[in-house]
Image (cartoon, rainbow, N blue to C red; front, side, top):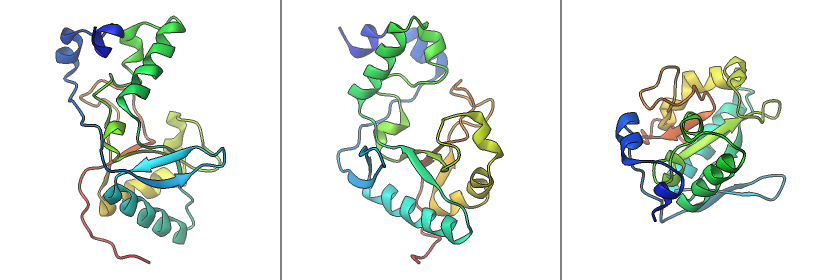
Length: 174
């Protein structure tokens, strides 16, 4: 039985939602260690862009905090299993969580971003100066907001989720 079958995610659901498979990163570096000791991993290119973007934001008085980064296919499966065990329906889960093998976090290029005052993954993040700063500057570092309102993947709006799609090298190290 596949991980998808195990989670109740059928080929029909994958086709219906247009989920795009995401390759699991093989080359990762330690980007940060959280105050709780949790290690956040990114690809070398994503880490370089993240560190530069974070420095530029700090120079503008905006503190960006990494809440989540690389996530393995196995970890994604565990997250979905936990939600199923809580009694949530798979369709409901897939509004906020990608199927195993389909999360941008697998690529090592996706980051969930918060601030010291907004560490929860909530839509209210869109009201922060950090989100406003990201909207204006993240593209210069190759990061894009993956799931805006009404996104084609059918996920809820995630103003905190940014993914390195192309490193434009439009910035210089400080």
